[in-house]
Length: 398
Image (cartoon, rainbow, N blue to C red):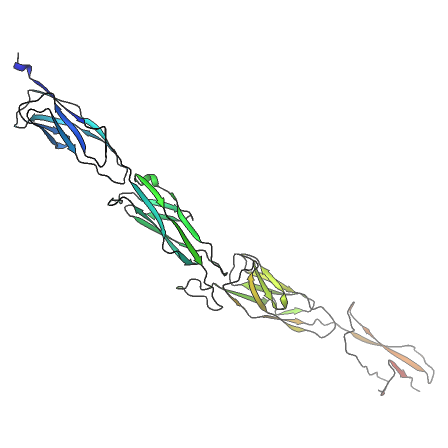
């Protein structure tokens, strides 16, 4: 028989808590099944050691905190026994090492806030607004360990924060038109985080609603502004041209009224004389038609001028900066209609000293009105002109 049969000593390790927060040290109790007369060094996995004093059965092993941060990084922790011997080098006769100890490091929930801001609270229509999303967290927290974030804003635009960065920006252009009066206020916020699950933050929340007033800067004709003065009154020019250089007096005269660019609403153009023509929203041209002068038998060709007097949206909106072009000119030319003056006598025979009546009749185009003349006098071939000849009559020659 071997004296003592090899005195059995067992060494064990247990976690002092089933769970520790990530900010806490994790403690474990290392125990001997009975006290011995000298210090015992217990070696743990990873090379760490703990010493149990002579005459004691327990000692505490302390593991550094994982560290409080903003990322999802809870973990299971295992600490195993690798060896146990007297600190002076003496080996145990019969030592048994127990199972590894297990515990859990749980996340403390730290909030990271993604806040939306705009670079201005006012912008001229057609100008730009830069939106920025910025990450903030607990004081001193390192937020740079994320994998990249993408934020969808309420207006549909997207702001991206690259991996490891703390902010990202996107620039949008304010709506613009050619009419007086600014656009609707731009109200924006973060609608969604497109890849929140990939960010690894323990808790990501969004904040910040921006409101940007869109102002108008009416201009004056010929002064459309410059790049440093957005819009300055968006220049619109209105023009009118005759579709032909000449029209016959029987034709309608047509003119094209044009905008230099299409606008988002119907435009009414007023012409001299009070006539109007409407250009549909999204179109640049419309036709103005002037009634025919009318085909007649008189010399009355004419030059026709149609001038622009005003242009505005049909809903009453005025242009910021409108220029009216020159009047359109065309010519109405006569179509040649023939009037025939025909001589006739009331008889083909007369007694000496008798009279005969001569008549002049005018032949005309069907339905033509010949009454607009100023009076006509005809000299006949066989009748000397008398001071006061009877109307349409002459004495018969002897």
